[in-house]
Image (cartoon, rainbow over all chains, first blue to last red; front, side, top):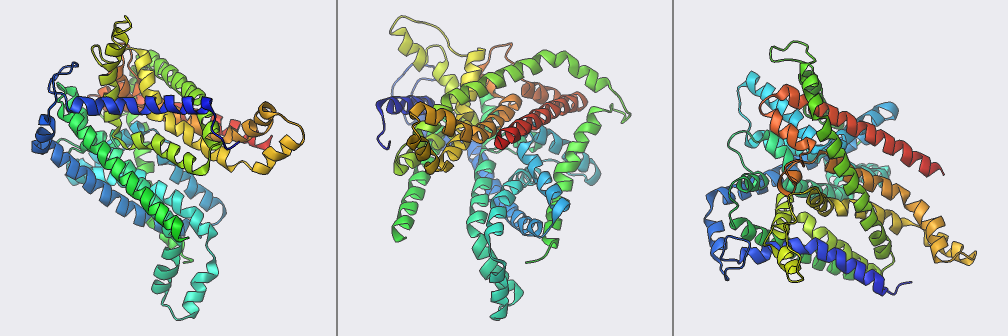
Length: 263
Length: 263
């Protein structure tokens, strides 16, 4: 049963071709001197132009900044919420858990539109414009439920007496909380933060509706570039992003292997 | 640790940034520019019925095709050695980390006339452009959402108790009987959540059809995007209808899932 059959190999290989062919095409065109579909010789020109592009570099910084801040705030808010929710009982708890699911099940576009309505309304009252802060708030919004979802099962598995034991042994409630509770919940907190970070990095739709006139993240920047005549710098950007992703994956894999060996 | 109060900031947050915005969609949909109650916006949404139907049709086709492709793959992968499983799953996930818009744009490059596919097929005498039609939109959707179908089914298959499979074999079942009577029924919850995770985003997505579709391939998300910035009442009305559709779909899937679980 453990031996991989020929049919399986062919099937998986075909799917991998399907998954990677488009990326290969992007990489291929990123070195293409010609702007058209045909090959016009090898060049690094688009990479140089990419680094000179202020708008793309600015969008990249914005994206990373928003992702770091959104996942940080979402993690704090979500972890506190998960602990609070676990102490609720019966109907109240069910109600809160159902509310948590709303951002997860509602389509991105509906969430984007609804947040845009809110921010336009608040903007008129408090006299502000949409931009960095509204995008950050929106990103926290769709990230928090994922943190709650990831931390909750950890709390359920945790032994309540551990916290009491820490208190008996002379910890202040804060120390006990930090050294015992947070320590126990860490894997859940970490995966919640990681999911938040990646969702925030990849978000287009919600940013599109809450960005206002001047703010751009990578996705919205690419969107506006795709609306004009498409510059080949986009291919160079894709290639670099892909290389970074592969590097991260390899590093994570090496770390996991080491952790396994230690066990 | 026993504090319910920790959930209070979260509840306030969810109220302000999730509940109120959703209510605002409904309020905007049922009002006019002067803030009076009006059914005009809802009435203006009716001419888009065909776009709704087209979106649901594209989403349905994409979901079915994702299931047809992902199910055998999930089964095959779940039968492999564990280390091989991890590699295959990681390879499938890597493209997902690329930016959403870049993934779609890559298909535009791949399918364009004079592009790689055209060049390849021209060699055996078939010429043409493969983009700007409904099929291209569906291919793009499958590319975006295939892993969302694969992962839940694969996870459920991995959790199936090997003892059950062995018991069925001991009792004289052959391979196909084991699959039909043990593995398939137990994988249904994975199928249900896979269908949900593909159908909801693909019915409500925008941009994909803009880039890969022809002139009549407009999806409901594109309409919302186009209308919302000029007339947010009509935009909100269409968003509201979309949200209601999605909710009905989720309730149906949930009921179906529960019944299967009891059997």
